[in-house]
Length: 286
Image (cartoon, rainbow, N blue to C red):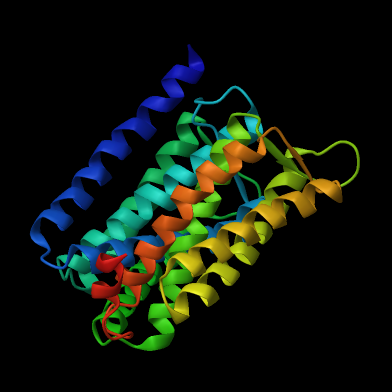
């Protein structure tokens, strides 16, 4: 019963921030660019969370959704870093909310954190709530800058956006596999969840770098095949070296990554729009 009550505040925030994002997309004409901004914002939040939560365990979430406490903690972090904060950032950027609105939004998350602490669904280890008050508005200003660079078609930002889009998708997919007990990364015979969530981001980053480099040149079936083979090969290498215990069959792995790699090709068109002449037409012809 306690765990069920834990989820209610997370559920309320989910509906609030999903509503904000939905409104932002409804009012925005260039939805592909807004989606690119959203995934970039999530990717930046994931990188921040890798150091703050995965490596240095600054705090602990207790949404009470998953039975395993470690997975439940990571799921709480995903709700925060993939939904609550990034959705708000995209809304503020898309609606061109000024610095006062950003500061007030920072205060809002500051108060939410205090409430979560009182409800016992969030626990600080070395993190201080004032950090939330400082870093959240700063993150919102980064979102504004990122969107400006996307509109100006700055190549480095476009390439970084593609990398972050792929990394976010990989990280979320690997989390689903972990919840379904299909994959567990680690060292030695016993793979702890602590080891798993340190190695998983490194794996996702490595794969995303290769995929980004591949799709930077063009989006074709040969590129998709190369990324597919690299992904399967990397999985098998990790299995052989004992760095991952996998319950995924080869056929299942191929089918899943066939769809995922095709999606990465789409990402490359959206993220690199305007950098590669004729990319949209090339995709349609294939």
